[in-house]
Length: 152
Image (tube, rainbow, N blue to C red; front, top):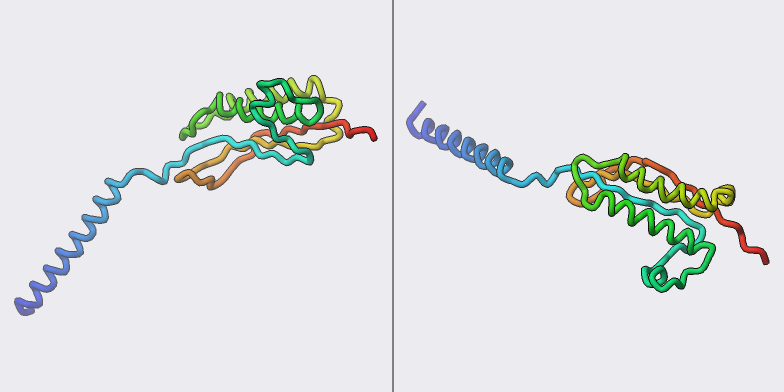
């Protein structure tokens, strides 16, 4: 093998090793964007408009009927954020679930007889986020809310 061929092979090996080293160093130094964070989400499927504004609650202008449901759904959302304010890698299913259960069973104690006329289903999910995007979810609880149809 001549000297030029040996130099070419050595340079090629040197460049390949340098490239492998750079890729390895870059991978080691990059932040861990692929970390899975656990969060909680309440999905609402309702036949009634359950929108509510905080001013309605503060001013006492909420009427009966579906506004009670709207307030209950808002209470569920607040309970999730109060008991689990930021996504973490561990999650806390029992704490979030218990907080939501307390609200639901309080509603059910007053309006449980209406459950056969279900107009709203709220589903509590544990979601797995990577880079802020939900990649998968697990259903933790399903809450059924009933309502008496208006008499005409």
